[in-house]
Image 1 (spheres, rainbow over the protein chains, first blue to last red):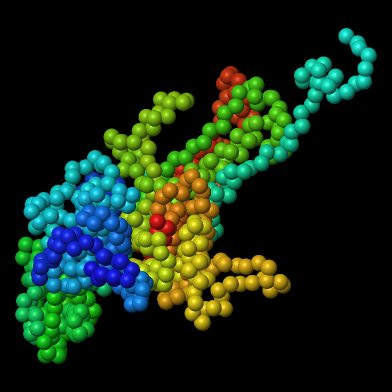
Image 2 (tube, rainbow over the protein chains, first blue to last red):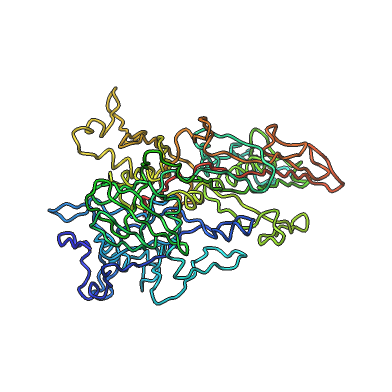
Length: 177
Length: 454
């Protein structure tokens, strides 16, 4: 993330910065969106085809977090444009996962070797919109979580209980999304 | 007992406590303004109703004819040469690719022609060749559009591509509101009047009409569709109301335009700031959904104020003349409201929706903190060249001998003193208003919700 000293944007502590994972060249990381709306089609076959509908949702690329090391509140974001004199940001990235796809599959990925993705990955590891960030601001709705590599399977979160066998996605299925 | 003295106020009031009249203004103030804040303007007076029969109503929409090859997760070999192989492309994003399709490359906006497509275990391998003989660069993660095609002399036809349709649906909901009054209170007059009548029952009826309006309109804005449908063999939502019977029927609810957008449209969040970037983001996403008309931008007063302040504060010399609009006669009033804003591809028409200002209904939710970009004039193009209302109300005719002529709201009556349809021997009057309605939105893909208040 671009650090703007004048305005303090992204001025997280060195310890926190060092603790963040870096995307390696060619490495792909996957995330699961938590913003789906259950498909309430009474036809169970149709439900099973697509248990959850995902609209396109922006993950705000600006946030305010508490640095766990410095204990300071820090404004963070993926900066697109800023005032060079004041360091104030005039435009943050508008990140809408899978915006190019007509239907959002609910899973999105970032890839090492792409600088935009690498910067975004740093941000996504510490934003309050990530469900798995420790001590996240609970006032903000969690929008996604990272599908960890060491997990063979993960279960997409179904927002409300539905009388349907839970759909399990395996690693090999991820290649299809 | 007679006494000597002046007949004064103290004397008369002491004779009997109810001898004095009471001074009461017969008009009751409507300080809650519930009727006004129940209004959703339908969305700007473009309401169209359509009769329906089944518990679920469906709409179909077409799929995108322009296809892309998404190389996310794929392996690219020989990038930087004239012949590149892309392995492991999910078939869902390349299954329609065929030889002679032409790809637009991200790097250099160069063209490459597809030489072969081989499917194996749901994954495709594409071999593409530069059309100009130069080297082409493809990076895994690139999204390549299949923008054209080119065939040879005396060529054969390519494979047919089947473009499908997708379905979306919603459910209608049964709304009911009850007025009930006993024989004693029905006859008793009261000191104040409602609609010119000194009976409490008139207040009750006015209140219930507004309550019904709130219930229906609020569902059209903020409702979540139930998983239960009337046709379910084992419904999860069961009517628990046993006030006048045993209840037990299945319950279904309709989806409002907020959830329609969450499921099919786009939700944005500016994190509390408004700038040109706010409109850039909204327009980029409208374009991403191929919306080509102008928009209504519907929001609460709070949300609109942020836009008004931003637009009226613009410092550009080109817009300084509209920073403040003064009263011509004496410049003693200032208009900070922006009604219309043309920028980029779109003209946005701003509308304040009273319901989004209600202090109780949605005040603490994202609904009241957002602007909704909706198709202007509530129209969507349909196959064949004509247009249909974008949002409509599906309703089931009430089927009652009593109720509105438009078949939307029906009445049931009970009680021996019911003025419309006396029933039974018990001395009371009950009128129940009911309606069966649901929202239908043909193109929620064109809707954008943009949260601009934290």
